[in-house]
Length: 258
Ligand SMILES: Nc1ncnc2c1ncn2[C@@H]1O[C@H](COP(=O)(O)OP(=O)(O)OP(=O)(O)O)[C@@H](O)[C@H]1O
Ligand SMILES: [Mg+2]
Image (cartoon, rainbow, N blue to C red):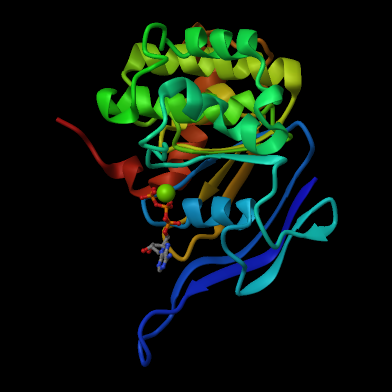
């Protein structure tokens, strides 16, 4: 279980400058195996929140805990997919994908069948020996996703992982992620700016306000699984979407397009 209690994170700049409060008084409990989607405007502190759980940053105030113990550093049970592609440029695609497992379990820990399956599911067949600079941005991101998934982490922290992908690839990735989640049941914290994606994937959606980020809405998505793409056409789905958009962009009610 992950618990954030009254968490505030301020960044301190040059002397004499006011600190920048990125996250303000956030309390959140995420159960084991839960799929939590986080949405909010740009700069509201979503990445900061993920970095706190990842153990890359420490809170200025409040507690960030895993199983009732303070998170003070990154750990092998938490895999991160960063918002920016973050591959090791001198390694091949296959080596990058295997890298997380190598750190955890050494070379013997890498199952070649699992690696081949991951390469295939990520649509990277034939690119195993390429280096990151020889890939498109979306392909690099898929390698980073594969690296995180390969470790079969207990906790998966994903920061807008599908943001750089085209609609079809994104939808394939969503399906694959849900399939893996169904089998391994990791706890997932999934940041996205796409409300539809949040509702389609999440057990629960948290909506943050503009900076300093606070929780404006925390809503359980009570839609049956497995979820098919055409769920987005249903009335229930659109009720959730509307509710979230109303909180996310309250001025929308009166705004017209065209
Ligand atoms: N290391 C840092 N040092 C100083 N300020 C930072 C740092 N990281 C983030 N910030 C600031 O904290 C605020 C929140 O940033 P954060 O990256 O968490 O937002 P975000 O919600 O992930 O935005 P986006 O949707 O654009 O990715 C921003 O104003 C940003 O400038
Ligand atoms: Mg971010």
